[in-house]
Each structure stands twice: as structure tokens, then as C-alpha cells.
Image (cartoon, helix red, strand yellow):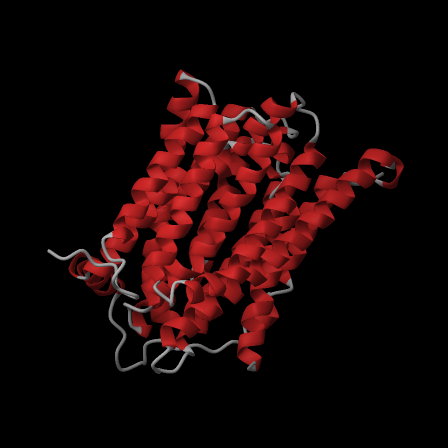
Length: 411
């Protein structure tokens, strides 16, 4: 493994570690500041809208000025985000720093992956190598998330049983301080990474790059289908991301066990890690037919959602949660490999930004749809609707099961 690849994997792991430190507790932490649930919803929407608005522009800027520079800027913004959420208590300030967080995620989205894939030489089995590298990169992030979540769990348990140890900060404060440090420590590593960018002789303006990328998206049937497939899938899978804590609280009839949510988060993350690691085996099982793997993973996800809907048993819900995380994670590197097989090096970061943008847009649509379903009926029906939507997303790839790396629908 080259030094550059090691740095990319290390940055990804540290980024996952930073996220894992606060992911199980961030909204509890904000509510403890006196922010209402309605205001928390505003904050969640703000960060999602920021990502939608800036995903594509940030990807194009990364292509023009350098992906490592874009990632370095995202680290600076993440440091500000971490400090702001830790220090400020009023809604306007939190909104500002949520904007910084959304902008940071937009700048970081796909940059390290694009640098990694651009280093793969042209060869007969390039798509298989790309899939394995993306799976390894995503696995590194999940490993970091698990480490961070375990640290968060241990500090919460220590705070619960030995509160006298936390005279200055509580355990949630420590998580945000540590997250800020994890982003800061990446800065010197990020500055040493070199990547491809436009030469001085050929630097198109931002508007030219934007128009070219939009025309390319319209013209290339493969990428267009991938974007639509991702959007529909995101509409369905958002239920497990945003509603699982509510459903778990109903099943155990206990709402004061944040450490249990940390345990569930860690178990789900470990299952995701298995999914990323096993994705290469799934590809081998289907003779590297990426469309077939995507169909299998999405149908498996849909079946798990439908099973959760049909049963009120706690063990069924937990098993379904783990299956969804496994299938979702196993499909991520496959989806990326399909995209990379159909775009050139100079368009990778922008294409990944478009993919992330469609994913965020699908998530917002999904939250609205599932909120309507939950308010008009039982929360269990959210999982029924999710299963149906995910099954529909598999249809984009069923029509191209005879093609390994192409998902375009013939006109």
C-alpha cells in the first residue's frame, strides 16, 4: 500500500471517529441546551438544505482547485462546527454552525474517494479494483465511527455511575471537544496529499464547469439512472435512519436509556462494517455483476422493512435493523463502482457530489413522506411504505441485469 493510500485511509478513519463521538448524542445534547424538538427539526432541515445547495458547487470547485484543498477547507469548517455546537446555546448561533457543518460535509463529500480512484491505472479489471478500494475506504470510516461510538458509550456509563469524575464537563461536552480535536489533527495530514487538478493552461470558469456538468448529466443515461435510483432508495431507507429510535422506544417502553441507543448504534455500525467488508464477496458471488448485487441488496432491505412492519417482537426489529444496515452498506461501494465505471477522472468529484445531492434530496422527501405516514397511522406503517419504495428503487437495475457495469435504460 502506497503512502498516499495510507493517508487517505487514515483521514477517513479519523473522520469516522469524529462522527462516532457525537452521532448517538448530538440531538440529545442540543435539546439539553433548551432547544425544543421543533427547533431541532429546523436545525436538521438547515444542514440538509445546505448540503443540497452546495454539494454540486463544492464538487466542481474541488475539480478546479484540487480535491485535497477542498477537504482541508472542510476540516476547518468542521472544527468551527464542533466548537459552535459545543459553546453556543441560542438557535441563531446553532443555525449558523449547522450551516458550517453542512458546507463542510459538502466539501468533503467524495473528495478522498475521487483521489483514491484516480490513482487506479487503466486495466481490464479496473471496476473490480475500484469496488474493493471504495469498500475498504468506507470500512475505514465505519471502524472510526465504531471506535468513537464506543468511547461515547463508555463516557456515558462512567458519567451515570461516577458523576463526581465530571466536575467541569459532562460526558457529552467531552465528546464534542474530542470531535473538534479529531478534525484539527487531520489538517497537517490533508495538506501533504497531492491530487490531480486542472492545469494553469486550462482552467474553465465555474459557470462553464457547472453548465458542462449539467449537460453531461442530461446526456449520459447511465449516470442519470444512477441518480434517480439513489434518490428513490434514499426516500425509503431514511426510515431506518430517522425513525428507528422512536420505534425501539415503543417496543421497550422506555425512553430514558440513551446508553441503550449507543449500544444499538454500535451494533448497527458493526453490521455496516461487515456489509462493507463482505461486499467484495457478494460481487464475486454474482460474477461482478454490479446491477445484480444492487438488486439483491435492495430486495433484502425491502424484505427486512416489511418484516419489521409485520411483527411487534423486539428481536425481529433488532434483526431487521441489522439486516438493513448490512444490505445498505454492502450496496454502497457497488453503487460507487457503477458510477466510476462510467465517468472520467476529471469528473469524479463532481459526479459524486451530484450523487450525494440526489441522496440528500431523497432523504428530505423521505422525511416528509414518512412524517405524514407516521402522523396519519402507526409508526410501524413507516416501515411498510419504506419497504415498498426500496423495492421500487431496485427496478432501475432489474432491467439491466445482463450488464455488469452499465445501468442505462435503452431509449
